[in-house]
Structure formats: C-alpha cells, structure tokens
Image 1 (cartoon, rainbow, N blue to C red):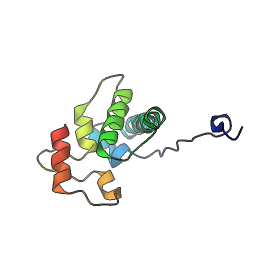
Image 2: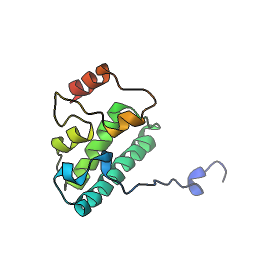
Image 3: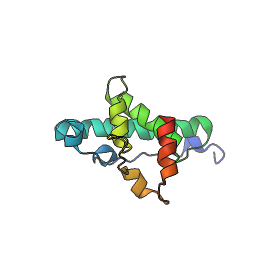
Image 4: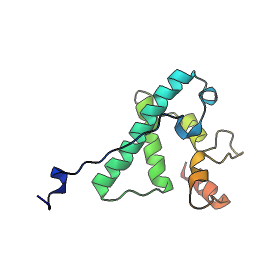
Length: 125
C-alpha cells in the first residue's frame, strides 16, 4: 500500500473568494455579486488547470506560460466557452496598452518584473 499513494493520499485546492486578479467589479463593468461568482469560477478553473498540467506532464511551474494557459481556461469557463481578451489584458495589467499597470501577481513575485518581462508578455500575446 505504501507504494500506491493514490489509494490513500488526496490533494486539495483551497480557493479564496476575493476578486480574481484583484480586479474590482466596477473595473469589470458588473455588480459585486456577479463578479464574485465569476471570480470563483475563473479561479477554480485556473487552479484546476495547474493541477491538470501537473498530473499530465509531471510538473507545474509558476511561469508566465503556465499562467497564460490557466487564465485562458478560467476565462473560457466563466464565459460559457468564449474567450475574452479584454478580461485577460485587464488581469495582466495591459488594459490601457501601451500604459502598463503591474498586475497583482507581479507584486507577489519573488523578483520584480522588468521591462523585458513586459515586452515578452506583449510579444506572446
């Protein structure tokens, strides 16, 4: 049984109920209740996407590509299968391009984002 951890170990995903990507309901053009509901859908799908990639590929990294994929999946899940590029741009701080607002994850990172990171993100879009 020790060699078959899947028989006795579980994984949990704990989600917060806050606004997704620290974006307010007003910035999204919707009421608080609707935005909180959609934020939870986005966050759940986002985190499940990370878990899925870990199970499928054997690893999960907190890099920009993984975040782009997880955000994509969350946005699609919250919009009945439809992607919203304007939401994604707001989540990553590019809603007023070329002006840049550091998104919440940039302030949570162990290193500061640089101009090169922003340029890389713009090129990857």
